[in-house]
Length: 362
Length: 268
Ligand SMILES: Nc1ncnc2c1ncn2[C@@H]1O[C@H](COP(=O)(O)OP(=O)(O)OP(=O)(O)O)[C@@H](O)[C@H]1O
Ligand SMILES: [Mg+2]
Image 1 (spheres, rainbow over the protein chains, first blue to last red):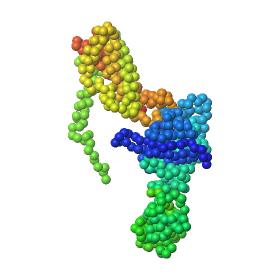
Image 2: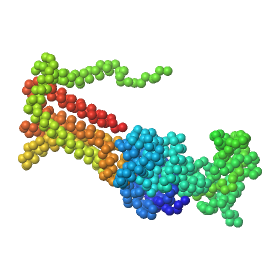
Image 3: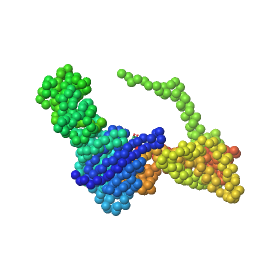
């Protein structure tokens, strides 16, 4: 992956309103987005994703901090002077002009020569497979088609960075899946840096090179989808991305310098993590698919009683109440007769895969 | 199972009777007026056969000609100025950051809708009397200014409605696509608010064409508009010539209001 930075967000804060009504939408956010990367901002509603995007586009001005584009500060530039384009959540297509004119709008505002505009528009129409609808008005095409036009319109001026604010949220499930792949391909083909906003963790994991998980105006963790999934730094991240179990545990350094986690019930497992909140009481998280059920407590890391077995197609979720009175879910693949052997009320042991214990920062 | 009957005012006893009575009261006089404008005789009560004679009489009447001319000159100018001002006011009240006193300004723009017309008329009369003394100017401009003033809210309301119904993201998108504020206005805002501007100007035109009270107060001798001329005539003998003029005014108004309706429907 190229390591040049496309956009730097440095210590950016944004507050709305005054005095009592003040809302902090972003709280000292810093992140570097690399050139050529598919970067996703992921977080629940109201966490400040759109605000960060609008700051990069120039629709809002930061209350503090600065934003660089290829090393140059752009915080003071109005949106029409920033080489950055946006795909809006509502698409915001111009209803009074045709599909082609929409796509050519940016170029004609840049006063590009007519033949160049024509060529680029034709190429864009081809790219998003909309050639046959070039002369339609934008209110006479379907939602998926509008989405493509919005994409083509934003790509036509070949921006340095493309911002996409939940562009797929208005589409139905099947179309959304198709567009996810198309977007990813498009990013690859054009080599433009994409900053993509979503609150759908699955979408974020499948599409992104890197993901920033946000909550309450802060970026909690930045990393590849695998890093984020396997090594969530905080409870919020672990909880937001996929299903997981949380347990209280003790962290101690053993005599030979290794970090050992004492699980509820007394077993200790080693962790190879390098970033620790410090020894003592900690929270740990374990993914349901990284644990397995065994009969009898002898070789088990945790033990308890099954209180629910939930079948869900590919796999079965076995809900166990641990002896420490904490709930724990184990995901069992529905291959062979494996899942059939577990029933409510049964006493079981839980075996953890090596490296499955993740110590959280909070 | 039958769908549950919901309460409907239409099923109240006597609803139909009252509705018909109201519509009759509203439209019968107008229908009679239109019918008698084609009366061959000079009575407004006795039908003596069909003829266009009162239309041609009105057409040839020099007083009517001059009043029509005044009406048109005033209405065209007043609706034009009112529309320009109303457009700027609408942009100023919808396309700016919320500021203190915005509601006060909104109320002030719509002042002519709330202040009794007679009060505005007297106020303008006094104001213009002073100016007349100072400048010695006697022309139609006083009427144009007066009409512009009370036409502004009528032009303003449809334009504002149009702007408020417009997705703000469109202007944001234009800015995102390298349009300077001026080009964004020219290429996006103006074309999209155009039906509102047309509707507003037409409404202002009709309102100006129709005004009696303020015109009656502000006009100088010989500055009759059609409505004030008609008012003057009615004090003497009523002939179907009045019916003919009224019918023409009616047709003009209905046509314009229909156009406004169609423009507003084309919203989306
Ligand atoms: N113009 C504004 N005025 C006041 N508060 C605002 C404004 N824009 C955003 N906020 C507030 O800032 C916070 C972050 O909003 P933002 O739109 O960035 O959230 P988001 O992460 O995009 O959420 P969603 O997923 O719902 O789109 C919210 O609490 C919101 O209420
Ligand atoms: Mg948002």
